[in-house]
Length: 330
Image 1 (tube, rainbow, N blue to C red):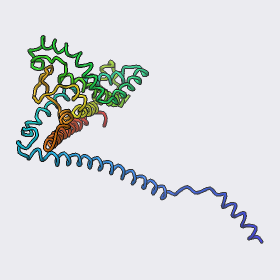
Image 2: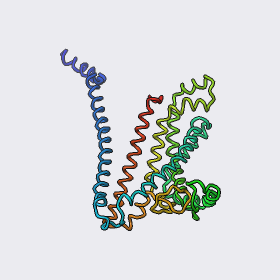
Image 3: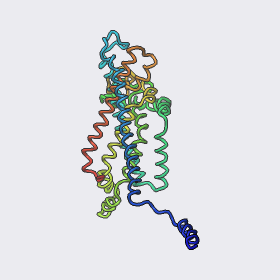
Image 4: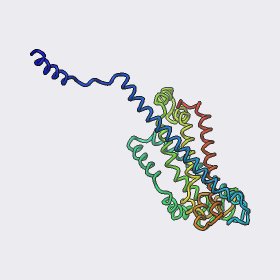
């Protein structure tokens, strides 16, 4: 009788018990599973990037080898390959270098204004505008360059010819259309300006607040504080931002193809109508008319562009690694 009456109470007490939390061993096992999943995803992503890079390099090498090994008389463009690609490689590096020289100082100035000088509301609005400008398609910049910038630059080129024609960069007859390598470089500079500005702004904002306050407490002006605390801390980030912008300038196709009046020459003159072309623009303009080994020649020039971009990025990583020990980012 007592056993029959005690069982319902025992069952009710058991049903009212709260579930026990997992023990230390179970929690550790759950964390280990999450760590394994995250580690696997991270490792797989890294391997996938390397695999894609290797596949691209392998495709360029396999498709470009026929252009390097075939006799000149069998090629569509009757030139030795390195003579054929040299003007395009020069134009690619020259246009990107000019764009970088023009864009980086302006980008750093804009980034410093947004991060340290502008009021909060204005800085927020400018940040949105910079981010939106980075999303504008390159063909829009090309249309602006050929329709607006080139006609505006034409009288400037005439003035440079008349007054600075003795200087080698401005020697020769000025272009009558304004479609020069300098115009293309200005378009590229405007295109990479938002990228360099946005990254530099984020790097400047990462400067330790205590470093800035210490400089101001010692009597430094705002510019002296920026020069002593912000710029040394951000040097590696600025170099990385500049190299990222340079990468886009090296591979830009449509804007250069639309703006530039190209020739197969190697020339440093900035205002002439005879301008070196870039590898990417030459591929875009020549590919529809290429056939057989001509296609292989263009792919081989793409391999040269791939090597140039890889070399530039390796140089940037080397510079950043050398300057890292002098940065407060560590």
